[in-house]
Length: 437
Image 1 (cartoon, rainbow, N blue to C red):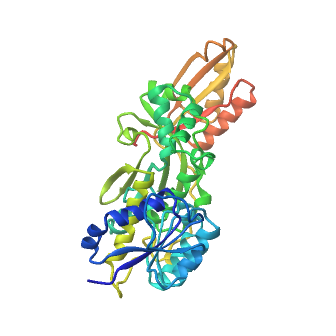
Image 2: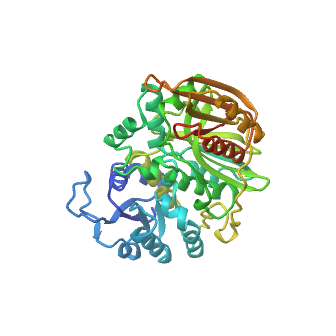
Image 3: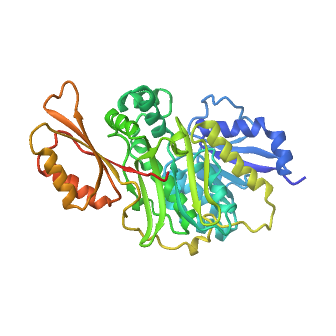
């Protein structure tokens, strides 16, 4: 039997402790599957005294993760610290430069420095595995990187943030406000004390940028993503979507167009009968559309200690199964130096149109003014519905518009015009409708 694979874990929070526990509890099974033992030989964390529910007494302790990354007595450096700079970046870089394999769950690090780190890994002939960085326990990275040879991807999209999906699910199922659902998500540990990164779409954008690179062979461009969060989704939107036969989901979408690659993160109305609409709670789902395979949908636990630990351990096991002299595949599907510069596409028209909710003054001429602004921007309306804004708003009306196929620019220009006409009493709501999803 080959020598044991020695693993060093940096970061012993929920995920790190879960990884150590799985490696201990599944040691015999992993040995049979990998043909060698997998042992935790070193760990690094800020607090040595904290009880993490797993015995780490046999592992060498490092206060500095960079020192552990460079240590001669580890073969794999597992980075679970988090953050795109500081010790996470410096320790991963040090490990790769020292010829150590790296496993990470850090989407922010990869979104910002992934290509540069991939160049080091490929130069040194070591693996940089990151299954846990996107969609938790769903094996989407391995599927795209290893199982789709010959396929040309046309679009990849999905629900990539469990916190947002949990909030939207509760809002629809129980009629609760966004704020109430967010507080409950924080109480249950699904959302951080500062939830901005999740609810404003940044987390989804980081994950989407990694999928985009794998799908289209481009350099990661996390800063070139059109992004909206869910903090302004109201019960009025949830109810209107339901009445129209839709459900609201926060989607990340990347697709190839004639003018380049389009990346966007935003609330989206999807038909309630569609598969993506049936993904509830903290579950994630990723759909991949290709020329040969057609559409592939992967769904499963997107967050949490066990789901993320499962993906991390899977990456470690892949390294354990490899042997000296084996030629490893590129980190992002193509050699890092061959990844093409990202060309941002113009936001295009798309099948399905837009949902627009306007809260307006209840006075003569408002309807006509709204219709004129739509016509001036060549927007064709599929439906227009008016009803009272609520029992305490007798002088207001809510107007729901559903457009035919049009462009983002046209919708925004029309809504800006309505706002300037001083007809609105509240911020307008604009949500894309994706019929095909």
